[in-house]
Structures are given as C-alpha cells and as structure tokens.
Length: 200
Ligand code: TYD
Image (cartoon, rainbow, N blue to C red):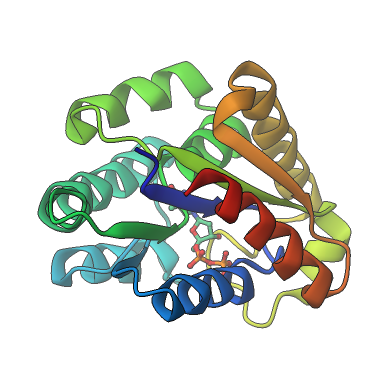
C-alpha cells in the first residue's frame, strides 16, 4: 500500500504549499495523516536541524551527510514506522532523496555512497512515492525567503542538486511524480492532488 509520500525539490519549489493542500485534502476525507519534516520533527531531529542550518557553523560535508542520516534514522524509526503501523498516511517535507541530491550531488559525495550510509539507519523504510516539484535554480532561489546554511549555496550548487534529482527520477521513474513547479501555485496544487488521488 502506498502511504509514505515525500515532497522534494530545490529551494523555493513550493513544497510547503503543496503539502498543506494534500494534508487538508486527506484529512477532509477522514484519513489520518502524520506530517513530518526533514531534518526535524522530533526533539533530537530539531536539535540536529539547528546545527545543520546554522549559518555560523562550518561543517565537513561527510559530517553534514551523517547528521542528516542520523536525524532521519531517528525520525523514521520513532515516528514514521509507528504511524504507518497504525495505518496512517505519512507526508514528509523532504526525505532521504534530499540527501542523495544535496549531499550526493550538490556536495559531490556521490549518490551511491550517500545512499549506503542512509540505508542502514532506514531499515528498508523508504518513501513509497515522491512528489518532485521541479523548478530551475534561478527561479527557486528568487522565491526563497530566508536562506539557511545550505540554501545560501549558489546557483551552481542548486543546479547540481536539481540535476541529481532528475537522475534519480530517471533511474526509478515509478517512484516519482514530477510536477512543473514554475506554474502558479494553484496549478501546482491541482497537479499534486491528481497524483495523490491516483496513488491512494
Ligand atoms: P527545508 O527545511 O526543507 O528548507 P527549504 O525551505 O529551504 O527547502 O530544508 C532545509 C535545508 O536542508 C535545505 O536547504 C535542503 C537541505 N537538506 C539537505 O541538504 N539534505 C537533506 O537530506 C535534507 C533533508 C535537507
């Protein structure tokens, strides 16, 4: 059954709007939804998040990748799996696929190596489906409100992230729905809801 859905995209792709729309849509239909964000959503995760996004911290790229993986292992085991066991739908603002794209591609650590360090902690619990909100780096950065440590990397970094997301879709097309996020937010929401209806 498809019940763990992640929302992905570069900065400014409009994930938050899409997630709230899907959440309302499901709740209105009596479906119990647990919404989480990565990194975060647990006490440990939020503390790790504050390290990861702190503009004043200089962090080695592998330390960064492992902190994302640590926050994720905790979240998936403590929150996501129990919610799935209760029969709920889990909506996730980012997921392991962000690590593949940002740390694997953006930081050039390699998608396969980042996949490997994440896999142990995830114990097989990967998002069943991923909504990829696709927008070019310049448009995305132009929409960004506040830049965090990773969001403030330049256009070239964001381009690498976007390209890596595209390659992930290519190698695993069944898992992804790619939505053109340069459309109006209404059009994006409608397109996302259509995919979710198809899946559930
Ligand atoms: P997020 O809170 O989604 O911020 P934004 O609104 O900018 O999308 O994510 C925080 C930042 O962390 C964002 O720049 C993407 C980055 N990130 C990674 O680099 N790797 C990861 O595994 C995750 C989950 C996020």
